[in-house]
Every structure is written in structure tokens, then in C-alpha cells.
Length: 162
Image: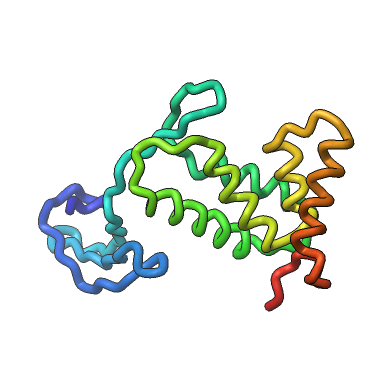
């Protein structure tokens, strides 16, 4: 590993520990040439994942697009940044565990909706209204009825208890 300060190849690891819930390794390094210390992270290289869009175009997987959609759905809702990060992490884990090189965007949308349904009802409806492209109020009301019927036993309104 090259030193980011002097460019020397003469560096050594002085400490290693797990990072990001054991999905990466954090290494503390020391440069024998200039004496400075720096940190590196090591992650498993994953298969490049392609997303098949509704129009059958393909584009590389981009985590930030899922994050942006979830953030929009959760805007001004009582949902922490940590909960959003966990939701996106869970969706990403499910996507990569499929071991497919190409995944339809509809699969990702359904995964996000399943996770949002368990997290917060209003955020779920917001995401569903954009994802399912509700054309009129009746479609919107029907989706709400389905959600209320499946969640009718719970009085928490879909909120996660902590």
C-alpha cells in the first residue's frame, strides 16, 4: 500500500479490526519512510450489478438512488438517519444475496416498500404512490385499503417499536 503523504511503498499494518458490521476491515498503517500514519478499508469485491429499468434499459446499480427515494418518502417523518441507513443496508444485502448479475428495478421497489411498510405507514404510502405511479385517487385509496387491511390488527400505525 502506498503512503498517501510521500508515495512510498514501504508501509506496514500496525492495527486491524472489523468495520461496517464485519463487512470490511479497517487497517491502521504506518509509513516507514515519512513516519506518518493513515487508515485504509478493505472490502470484498462484489459482482457488478446491473438494474433493468421499466423500459428495459440497463444501468449500473447505484445505492444513492435507493437512499434518495427513501429520504423523499421519509421527509418530515419521525424516522432517524440510522433507521434509513439500516433499511437501505437491508435492501442492498437482499439484492446482493440473490447473486443475479441483473435485477429488475421492480424487485428493488418491492423490497423497499416491504421495508417501509414495517417502518412507517406514511413513508410507505408516499413511496408507493411514486413507485406504483398512481394515476388517480381511486388507485391511491385502494392501496391504502390494502395496507389497512393487512395492518388492521396492529394499533401502532406501522411504526416500529423500540
